[in-house]
Length: 333
Picture 1 (cartoon, rainbow, N blue to C red):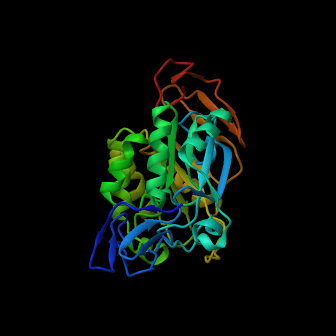
Picture 2: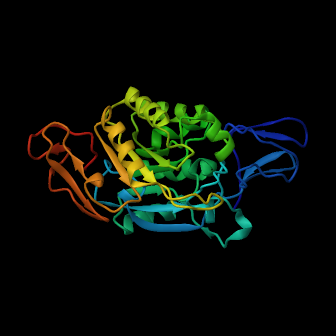
Picture 3: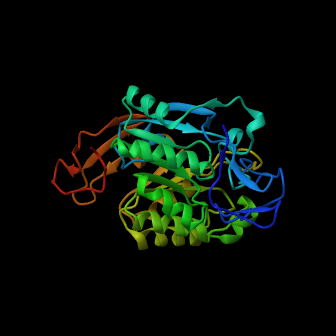
């Protein structure tokens, strides 16, 4: 089914302007926005992918990645198609950079998804794989139902959304991994087709709302891996809270960007910069080891061990370090 969208204005009898994300697409009749999933039909904006799912899996929560939100547990994860950015290096371009005509989409409603969450013994539902904010109406309706049942909602997002729709959905969201691609606005505009400031605002408002936030930064050689940019990114996160987990992720050639994978030395440099101001820094898309494990920042004991997706939380007692007893910023049931 399609559904009348929210967050838009009529410009005249035939034109509408979408207000969901900072692009503010102006659409004539039958036009779809940059996201490919919101369409003007005779002067009314519709959400074409309401209830349309291209992928549904039970994933380890660490795969989002979320390391401080019910570590070692599984979460039912769903996604549709489309995105409101055009990142040349998109790691999931097969669905995020395509439209509805490229897939056979399954129809799901919020009640059916809730039943699946319960049947899978999942901690809740993650909206991921493509950009969840362009799926706003369906995510809001589903998240509200999941929230009412005291289960968890997770967004894995680029954070490129306007303030009003963000505030409208935050009361139902428990955790987010937000992709902060660079602290360079030029990088956002040229390489991603967006801008930096809305993403920073999303991170700030989500933290202020009490949502558990983790941040991912994909390091791309020669584009966003300069020491100054990494330092700025770390300082921004630390200014909100030194307890926010930061994931530096290794780049591999994907979509339209064919540059070399991120060197290990770059990842190690970023890790050391991050550790100067943040208590929890992780490396992703690398061989699993110490850089994926969580240590107590007070006594140094390992509280969560990760080897692939084999997770040992034996160092935790609920949300406390089993060794020293200090409360840690980890949701652990």
